[in-house]
Image (cartoon, rainbow, N blue to C red; front, top):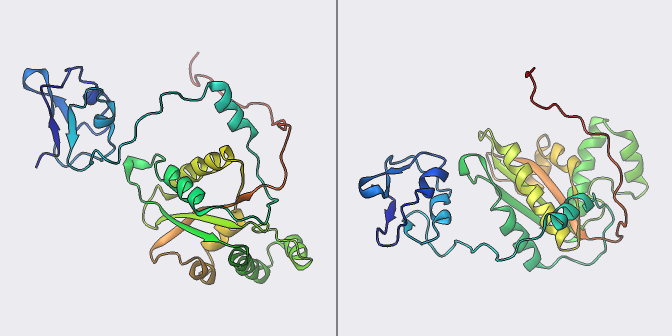
Length: 264
């Protein structure tokens, strides 16, 4: 059954929808209008509807309501570069909680990040409140202590230094079904979207590496996070209002790159 309909009165026959379709679902049909040439191939990416400036395409699997308009004015390259270069791994947070509305906005932005074949398999876990977050850190440290893998960190923990989640008021974890082979990549991309969106709002973010690693190995931490059965945590962020700001961008190693490898 066809999912895509073309309003021939509106269609400009520029066939841009065919050019951008990643799955080869569309092809030129009678009269030069696009048509759905391959059923059950569409991945619901929305490219065909999004590219059509005349609004000639409708898709039964993609209601028009959730489509968002492109902003009339986008930031300049200088502003985008400034955001990317100025983000820091923030590990010092104020006690001030992060508004639920802000977290909901960050999640909405992150869920629109690209995923392999538009699979959109991500599931999010949000833990708020310093006591609840600290309990996750305690469970993580319990596993690390038993494994004997990080004595320096344990020594810091025993003196009151939370090296796992840094006293953050929020932790957000991303997971996917365990059999899904692109889970690690999809979660990393979505979490990066969230990190940059949070940075743009003046929040501090740091990747929660210890929590992520231990959540794959320690069932009590999975239970504390309420990870759904059959899902794997592939990444997590600690997040909150930053206590300090950074006026300078630190240097990095020189660029290591190969241009046109294999060409004489």
